[in-house]
Image (tube, rainbow, N blue to C red; front, side):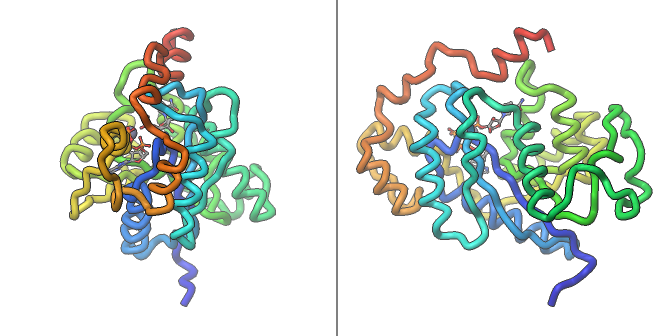
Length: 273
Ligand SMILES: Nc1ncnc2c1ncn2[C@@H]1O[C@H](COP(=O)(O)OP(=O)(O)OP(=O)(O)O)[C@@H](O)[C@H]1O
Ligand SMILES: NC(=O)c1ccc[n+]([C@@H]2O[C@H](COP(=O)(O)O)[C@@H](O)[C@H]2O)c1
Ligand SMILES: [Zn+2]
């Protein structure tokens, strides 16, 4: 039965997905269970958004292949879909912009625009937060919430110099919120505790402890493929087939972007941000 007190949530996972693994799909299941277990949320959709080639990460193969593999993987889910928008952009797009794009899509799908209906927005939300970010322009309760889904490594990468703009971190967490899958739960909490920005927005950070630890990573999968080893059961079968059919992941593909600086580092060190 529909509970009118629950808030609908859409989960957005951004990453390389080079290639997508079963752990990426598990993240969605873990996050949905965690949010729904609070009794406050109902997760209605998951979106996988592979990063574009402009991200320039070492070993990042073409977005067309990564998108197709993600689509094959998502066929096994009735609620997680792949969205090609980010992957199709000529230049790397900041995650905050990707979230904004999907939020606008969400509003459009609900027949709403980005103007907040103040009657429907809770009073306590109508203020500037301490970073000067106007929450009154951004939080509404009549459409599903959009939250960024990621692993603890992404949360911890917030402290890497020149990787994230501080205002983007504030917007991602303060305006939208994050669901973060963590293998070492205490470390992620410690990280939140040690950052003033993260601590201020702690109620918008959902840390999900993964009890059945699973260290599958795309790096491990690419390494195994380079060595001619089996990757079966680490990836959905159709993804394994696709990789073999197209001979993806070799010593050569791992050298892609080897001498190139990662797009965010390039962008933010240049601008002096
Ligand atoms: N085993 C895992 N546990 C928790 N989160 C994970 C795990 N694997 C990937 N993620 C998360 O999935 C998202 C996409 O990650 P990404 O595409 O970088 O995969 P990855 O396996 O970490 O790849 P790579 O080894 O190339 O960095 C990120 O938010 C990452 O933190
Ligand atoms: N400043 C930013 O918005 C920023 C910085 C670094 C990574 N990211 C994103 O985080 C994800 C990380 O992916 P990887 O873990 O595969 O590197 C990608 O989607 C990337 O675009 C965003
Ligand atoms: Zn990663």
